[in-house]
Length: 329
Ligand SMILES: O=C(O)CCC(=O)C(=O)O
Ligand SMILES: [Fe+2]
Image (cartoon, rainbow, N blue to C red; front, side, top):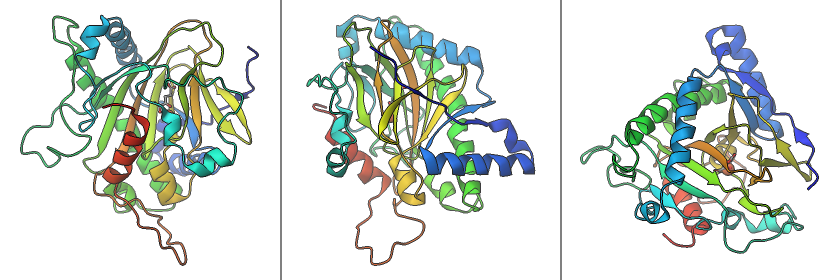
């Protein structure tokens, strides 16, 4: 299949946070990205390449386990933790009808009809205990991982990876505030990022020799920011100016994109994207979603005149988006 034109993601260096001029430059770059596609790549992020490689090795080892062992860890729809089978989610189901009418959903695509051709392991912060503020709330809970015998040291690695990578969206939320001329300590970014729902996900798109098999259907992300670790196996596509474009990040960078909640609050773009694994080999990725504080009300910073919309909390937004994309639990 002919390859698509490439979209060059803007490159943002988090090292710039260290100086006043640097912060100004980052704010400017974020504003430009937010007004164009909401997609960027972030370097100098402080997460060690060896930790990222170990996480990919762990993802590969997890998906290589016998299916029955993975299915025993089936995703719990309330905590949003656990294994999701190939075809279990259809992200195109999360689109609003206006996007379908506007033709943003690819018409020529071969519709598989059985959901996204990916399998996943949904995880998050595993340290919550009974009595904690978020205990018993949607999107919080304990990870559902294989036993120590089945996959040694996975639990420790997931915690280590989560702790290191969650600092990246935390810093990026500061950049969001700066890009709007706001004080990161007191503006909405502080409230939205406090004790947030964060979903960490191992994803596997199996190799296929069929063109146009949708690994993840066209969708925009639900929450504030997605921070995605990818390998050199391509497949991510972005919809921009009426066409699908290949996204090829530089090695070691995180792909960061704005989700619908941040878009709603700020007016920045949250673009449609999808994954089609045309590489002929397995593709893996590891997104970390900053979904936001459960009780944060997702409403525009600048009130819209005559607006009658009833705004939802982060928790309400997420529950409805997850419910509309998972066929079963
Ligand atoms: O696998 C990727 O590169 C992107 C994954 C993605 O878009 C998602 O999980 O929402
Ligand atoms: Fe996504």
